[in-house]
Image (cartoon, rainbow, N blue to C red; front, side, top):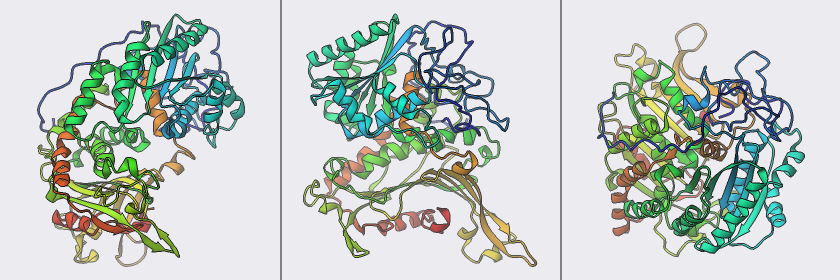
Length: 604
């Protein structure tokens, strides 16, 4: 987000931003455009603002001007020393114009952020640190407050002590960190209550009103993050909407996955939320869509002429979307066992990545135009079949003199559980661009490495003059585009090249863009920072629409029900291995080799 252009982080002499000289527009909550129902188609830095200045919370996209400090932590955003654009450059367009966003006039409006489930791990490890990072970078409005709401009893002081330990400043932004932390904590308040209790939400509303009136602003916007178990989603969303909605601005509710267990439960959740909120108020968050390389997908494809002609069945042999973790459930098996890897990772994270990768070019960068194209792709896909699926579960293994526990060794996992910790499946898109191209999705826990990436394997060169130099295995000379999402974010293209020297010797090398080196990015913004900021700005490009969720569940509900009704036993694989052997047979069925297993050390 803030690192997309060279000089982004280094261009910040101080941690705050103010945008000046933009014409005022009334801030109204504009309803989103209606959902497209068309069938699948063929390719077609922070303190009080400077007096008299204007402050606009920035989007996760970059903007067109350097900006001054928004909260007085010092300095102003300046162009990079090498003359390149600053981190806030976006062509000649302001971000609100570029993404067709409503205007927030923070000169007359305060912002209240409520974290429901404030005492949970997600809130402490991700949400509060992300909010503090946005504050330190000058990306929140001057008059904002944070409210924690949970069942635990604690005072404001105890709440601040709880979250203080999780707040850190980036390595590249240590100036005045302690001072910024103290100022941030003074804006944090706590209100205890039950998630299904109207009185508790009324008390929260009263507390928020007191703080908002103290800002002296006539308008107030409110956003709620539901960091709670799914069984209380509807009750908490109803309490927030019915008893805590602002009367003078917008109210937005962020819902964290899982969004149900199948089509029926997801639809029930959707109806429950719709009883209290409009669709434009609901932000279904998938934090993987906030990753730097995921947001770059559309930029990579639609702003580089070299890729679009190749992005089709004529040149691409297969696409692999891979997610692996080198650790197990580690005491969280009780939660994981309710869902399994197919629901927890593939149905949401990986399918969302696939949709962004394969969609047609949208009419504009407007959120609804982008999501319309994603829905079209999902509706063109065949439901996953059990014969195109491999399920696995990791077992214990002795390594280096110590025993690595298996999934069933986790005391929180039910005895004899058949819940898969590994899944691989083949998917197909029935349209003119992708007909016949296998999309292989793979996700697993307790594997040999931690990695998330997209691998695009191109077709063999027809009539290649140099095939005798590579031997009978043409896969050794196949071009491959790899988009490494994490760790060591990078984009590289494998090409064939002549080895320097006399004679003719060929080698496969990489054209390699390493984000850490190219942009001097010691630390990229966390996905939650980008997504929380997008909610503040009303930017829904990276959030999931209701019909999009419905289409995704339709692809997986049949295979999930079939595997569970037949009590399919997952194939065992050792902790720390490359996964079950069945995954290789699945790939071979479609003439594919998993790209993350070949020349693995060279890809790190």
